[in-house]
Length: 317
Image 1: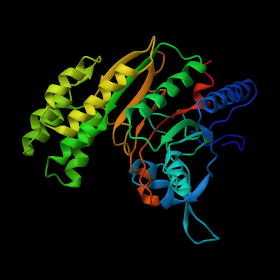
Image 2 (image 1 turned 90 degrees about the horizontal axis):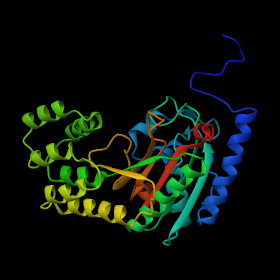
Image 3 (image 1 turned 180 degrees about the horizontal axis):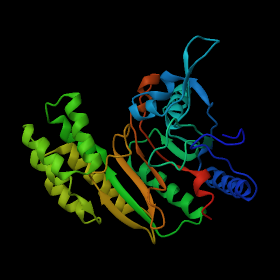
């Protein structure tokens, strides 16, 4: 192996690629500033307790090493969102706060969202509002970001993990059973779900079966209201999606609803969303609501945001 070779999954931008990246980076920062989102630049390294929080997948993707100064375990950030939770909690503010960032991150292994182990994560996050207007604001900003990157013909997928969580609350399941059921939904495996329901007596068995099938255009939300009419939290989650769909300014954007989508949303607690384009095999940008992520830092705040790999998307222009 030559000394000039980079590790697998690690890449770089040079020449015209670097210039294209820098051009769109500046445009995005101007866009975010115009929308009132303040730039933050989190450190590359923190104590692992601050980086991992409640996410097993982030834990698995975080490089860790022992700090010779403090004797504590440090980690290289694999996701910016936990750092923003810390920064917001540290501010002690109870007002609405808006943050944006464009930072290189590092992951131990590639996942199904980023194009490499060394993406440059760009995104924006809004803290301090539980209203769906905050979700609408960040969704529209995400779509504006993709348009700035000259990505058109966008398909917007909407979901709400609060529906699945509300159904879980009605059951007496162990953590292992909950994890197993969640993975069945991640795989979208109806046969495995049928086996699970046959082996476990669930109060909401019929609703779990119906949830797996609740995917389509916005009209599916009316069906969902009927399915969850006797489960207030799930019904409220569907109503949030109806409000968002009705109020979004999304001319020339196709909207699909997928209420069973759980794959990419480990620490999210409510509305989730992702953007697709027919020329790409995976989501280009994604995000959602993650109320309470900052509890570990002593201040529980409502929050919503999105992110994408700018290094990858900057080369699509």
